[in-house]
Amino acid sequence: MVAAGAGRPAGRTPTARLKDVAARAGVSVKTASNVINNYPHITPATRARVEQAIRELHYRPNLSARQLKHGKAGFLALAVPAMESPYFAELAALVSAEATRLGYLMLLDTTGADAAAERLVLDGVRTHLIDGVIFSPLALSADEIADRADQLPMVLLGERAVPPGYDHVAVDSVAAARSVTEHLVSLGRRRVAAIGRESVRGTASVRLDGYQQALAAAGLPVDPGLVRGVAQYGREDGRRAMHELLALPERPDAVFCFNDLMAVGALRACAEAGVRVPEQVAVAGFDDIAEGRYTSPSLTTVAADLQVLAREALRLLIARIEDATDGPESVQVPWSLQVRESTVGPR
Image 1 (spheres, rainbow, N blue to C red):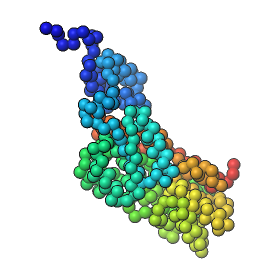
Image 2 (image 1 turned 90 degrees about the horizontal axis):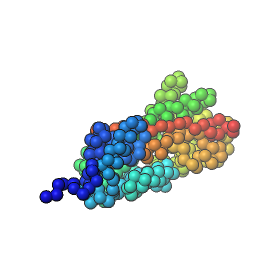
Image 3 (image 1 turned 60 degrees about the horizontal axis):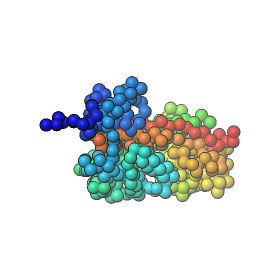
Image 4 (image 1 turned 135 degrees about the vertical axis):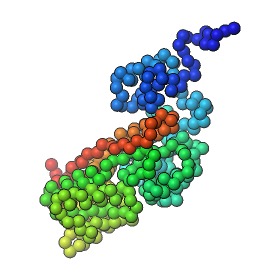
């Protein structure tokens, strides 16, 4: 009788799994997964133990084999409101590149910020095609998201309330919006307007919170007449809202637009009305799209680290797919205020 394992290199485990690597290295499955997927924030000693265990067990994270064994499709999905938005287009490119690096293919689903389309994402209509989804909802509330019956692994994006039990990656929009408004106030502006109010409690609502907090801290009144809601978040919406503000008997001397596309439209409205930016009205946006770096004047804005956002969203999603997570995580993405000509003039 031939003993099990005879004829194989000593110590080799042909069917070594991720949990075997974790056990050999004395770490959690989640930590072993993070080392294999080359995520940061792993100590050199821990990384060395996991890599040694991988070598000893001859572990190979073969995607095709995992698909056959566990029924994985090898596809992930990214569901966003619109691809015509430069912000979401850039995010999609970064997520796709990172997914490819990790051995997955990324499918793109656009919802148009439509509630019915977003419910299709939640209901798992496409679950037989994908292993997990990164979802940026706009139309649905946290309660509606919580009602989903599908168990497909999901990571939520966006600066909004999320139901318990969900992984979430976002920018601290309250702090960022407060910083933009504080910047405008620091320039001596006293009638600071805002463009981008919304009805659903989401991204724009939290940016409105930051705007109002900054005004209150500066001892300035929050004038409802200086806050303009819009139907969409495009250039034309910003242009129209800015024309409304410029038509007021006492017009604003600064405006904070809740995204860069609306800020580009606001700049156009100022040019059409013969209003000088920033001398008469300072204009700021949010998102740091490439277009804003080439407007005249160039646009002051909030820049989120989208590379970190993409990496963290995929880290959380793959950990959940592999059941290598200890529970839901909420990750805040770094951001910075990019001060340009639209608020301070040429430098």
